[in-house]
Amino acid sequence: MTRNQDIFLRESSPSDVREREPHNTEQAPSNFDHTDSRQWESGRQRACVLVGCSILQLPIWGFAMSYGVFQEYFSGNWTLQGNRELTGIIGTTTNGVMYLSMPFLFALFTRRWAHRRQLAALCGAALTCLSFLLSSFSTQVWHLVATQGVMAALGCALIYSPTTLSLGEWFNTSNRAVAYGVTLSCKNIVGSACPFLLRYLLDHYGFRMAVRVWTAIAAATSTLPIFLIPTHPSSISVSTERTARKIPWQFLRHQTFYIYSIAIILQSSGYGIPQTYLNTYAHEVTLLSQTSATLLLTLFNIPGIVSSSFFGYLSANKYVSLSATTVTSISALSAALSAFLFWGLTSQGSMALLVIFAITFGFFAGGYSATWGGVINELESEAARRNEAIDTGMAYGLLNGARGIGYVSGGLAGVPLLKAGRVASVGAFGYGTAYGPLIIFTGLSSVLGGWGLLWKWKKLLHLV
Image (cartoon, rainbow, N blue to C red; front, side, top):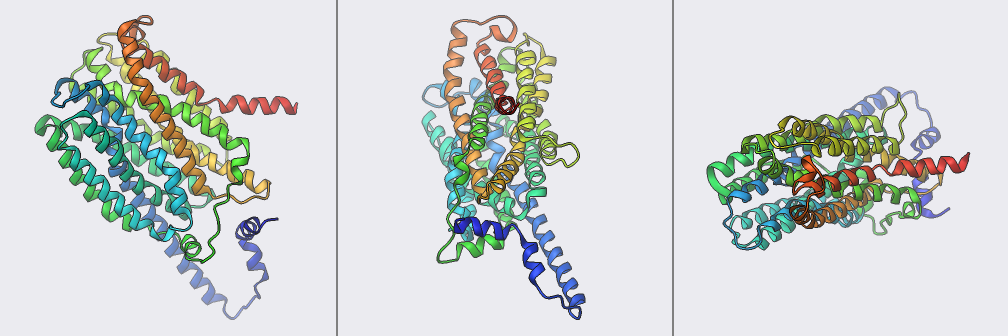
């Protein structure tokens, strides 16, 4: 047994330590009081961490989840130099860069720099605000791609990574999935409210002033919540040791991690397409007003408020045992049906089907990332069975990296798919519009996001 494995086993069995302690009846009352005090303080800290992480969803995800409003605004208010179609990659690039940088940031702040998490998050807030402020002076498309798509995304990732690591450490295996679900619900609340906020700012003040106002909002909502999220004492003690433990990478030797990572890449490549193009589709194809088009993006994000907690609950449900593979497949396959049946069958003036699509796809696809708590628990259980160590924070960071690959690849594929749709149609209804290839791509990528179920069935067939 390696030294890291021995440490992992010792940390996993605190009851062994308590059993070896001598029983002192004289100190029992004071010990109970001390224990109650520690439990209360620990509960208060967990509440602060959860509140802080929930508030931070606004500066981190508000712009990325509402970029479709900017995309639709640019279609009728173009003042920049360069190819207007390139603005379609900004939203997916923002998400992609954020998620792609997370594995590196998670690795950096998991062990050695754990005691600097709050400082890093504050630096990320400063970079985010500076990037949005600079983007308000843009004169060419590539300026927006660089400031909003790359720089601001890196700043948001620098806020998200250390604070999410602390969230995962303050909540243990039994309630970690629920904590992730709550923060993801707050993320979707942000995605539901921000489209109307940004639409109002764009209509009344124009692009440049709207971005400057957003800069002020991001600054106001990022600073204080960071101070509510202290690093867990266990990570601080490890990071200050001269011979800090190395991150255990044994879980990378096994299939399970790669099965889920591939599924996340495939699902994410299609998830960003409606976020970017649903507004313009509603305005150009179904001839909806700007207000109705903005409402669709809000309806797309609202169901995630419920679905994130719902799928987080399914992943940690003690009464009906569902594997992580089953829960991810429910989310992926249901989202695919929504894309094929509702978005694909919309026609000119057909707002009802588009509303149904926004709600159902937003619910099932929006809850997909909430299943990761169950995935992490499965990786943790697998490591325990193999008598191996695992750093769940690092594993979560790598899953985010997989999502980043999906976002970037989906964004890059979206531009040529839209061009192909303008050249030749692929059927009737929504499929016959310029957005037909995008609809098919969204549905297929969602289906493949649940391919882990096939892998599990294959394993069961081998056992029979």
